[in-house]
Length: 585
Image (cartoon, rainbow, N blue to C red; front, side):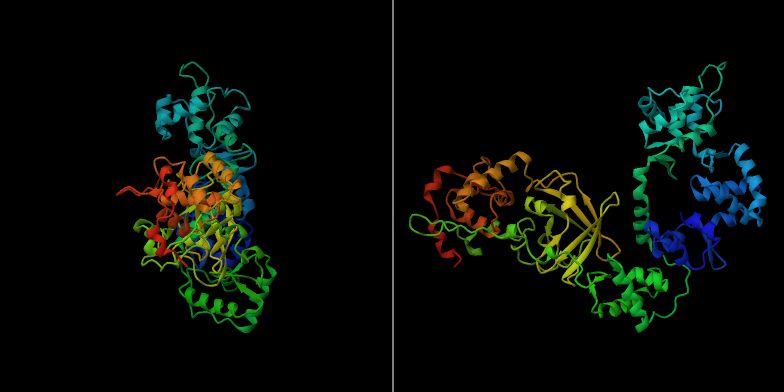
């Protein structure tokens, strides 16, 4: 895309002009600059202008060789008009003078292929063979026997003499290396018998294969479904952001954001229905990107100017929106997170569901109270920030958050998300390039907005995912992991059992419910497993469940074992009176 625009422009002095042409695809100035500087085989900085590198490499070469150089640089099928324009610049001749020669060479010379939509390619990108024996042809094209056999088996029902065969083969086999697909067609059309007619035409096969609607030929030589190609741009943008190379630009003093500039910047933010980043404003208004040496000071200056504007709301990182422009539901903790308190009493009139101080808890439970999987919204003690902040965090989704589209900050290390401002917008990308807008409320200690992605996850409790920082503030990479967390995973069948228990929980103490949950585990269960299950039945605090396990004599741990057991014969023994002094008032 960049090469095509560079050819159309002839050259780029101001990269902002090139970025403007590509903005519709989401490609900004920083991405353009990064990709130009990190791909010297494609782009050249010559006489203070960016041009295609092939324009320099092709000078002084014969026509056909110059055409091959340009196509190699382009990396894929190239519109004939673009190729003609570029050859004209290399030869320093008008395009209309070189066009007949370019068209003649492309049509008749073996190295080139012209497709039905007037694109030019290199024959070598497809399977090249005329009359070689199959094993020799495979070796010349870099194809293993295993690759060939696998593709041939998949395409066993294709009759390559049929005019529709190539399109049918692409639909069945894609994604597939074009050379491998060509090898199967070659074996089918060119029989080993030396007296048979050679029917495989490498150039025609290539032209037909890359012209199948709905499929794209990529620079790695593979034909992909068009849907797969949609993520390539977003992946390239993210890669460019990581590279952010320093390129040849004339860095001077940091910008001074003048009052008249501020008015223009504020107007741009207000005109945008979505978020505007200070990074984008620096690109569009000053042509400043991460590769400028003054970027940190430039960013500090523009951030200070924007954060002082009453009409704007800073929503974290370098992100700004119109004042108050965020969902109202993120301002409060949803009602289902409130804890249910039971007021049942024993025959002696004492409360059944009581919480103990730390001294009354078993030593193992005292430590587990601070485990990230034990804590939750409205039920956490904020921990100190870790000495070494990780770039990636492993997180576990519980059933209540899956239902509400939220996630608790309690699982995220303190300081991993910036503490200011209190309300922040976060953008997450999954491996396919999909984008999700998330809202963080530091006062509520919740992340909101995951509902669409949560409901794609079949595991209701215990699904594991990672969040990874990028070089952009408040932009994260999201990825599901294959295996659920073994401690808080709850199967679909068990979830239904717990929900039914919840339906009949009215009038029961949490102790009664805990006994029913523990009866399911004859070999014992981990505290975190018990806590996850009881919270499906009834919203209960981590301390309450730890206190019930520690103070009622029907629950016990064996020496050296982390799991908790239930003894139905000891239910009548009730509360351990030695724990009474530890009951929280």
